[in-house]
Length: 125
Length: 109
Image (cartoon, rainbow over all chains, first blue to last red; front, side):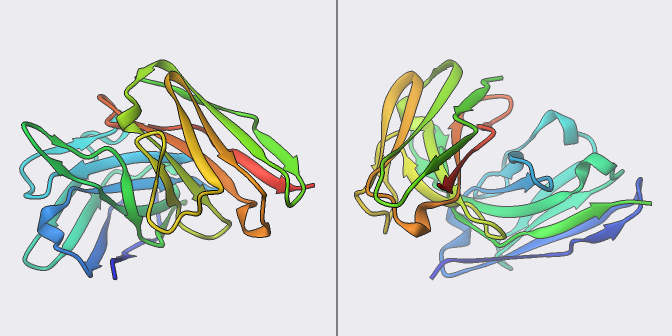
C-alpha cells in the first residue's frame, strides 16, 4: 500500500534551517509529482512547494520563494524540503503529498491522493 | 490567485441528517480541478472527491460532490459519527498552483 513518512521536523530558532524528508513506498515514486503542504496550528491547509515526477520542474508559494527548496531522489524514493531563514510564521505541520499525475500534452497534477502523517516544525527563540 | 471561500464555518447536525457544505471560488474553476478533503483531529487530510463529483477509492456513496464554475457543493447524507470532521475544498490552477478553502467544521449537535 502507498506509504509516505515524513521526518526532520523539530524546534528551531528564527533564521535557522532544517531539511525535511519524506520516504515513499508502495508505488512507483518516479511516476508521480510530489508536494509539500503545511498547516499552521489550528489553521487551514497551505500548499508550499511541488516537484515534477522527474525533478524537471519545481514551483513554490510566493511566501517561501528564495528560502525553501524542494528536491527529490528517485533512486531513494525520497522527497526533500530544505527550509532556510525560518520565520515564526513557518511554524506548522508539514505534510508530504502525492499528486495524482496525468501525462498528456501537458502534465497535470490536479489533486493529492495520498498524504503522510506530517512532521511538525516549530520556529521559536 | 483564486480564493476559495467555504461556508458555513461550522455546521452542527445530528447523526442521520444531511450536511451541505459550500465552496465558492473568486474566479471560475474547471470542474476537473476541484477536490474535497476530510480531516480529523491529529490526522492528515484524506481525499474524498476529485473532479468536483468523482468519489475517491473507498468513499461511500453517501458522500457526493457537485457544482461548476464558481460554486461547488459537498453533500453528506445520513450522517454517521465518523463524518464529523473538518472539510476543505481545493483547486488547481496557477500561481499558486493550489489553493484551499479555509475549511468547514461539521460538528455533532
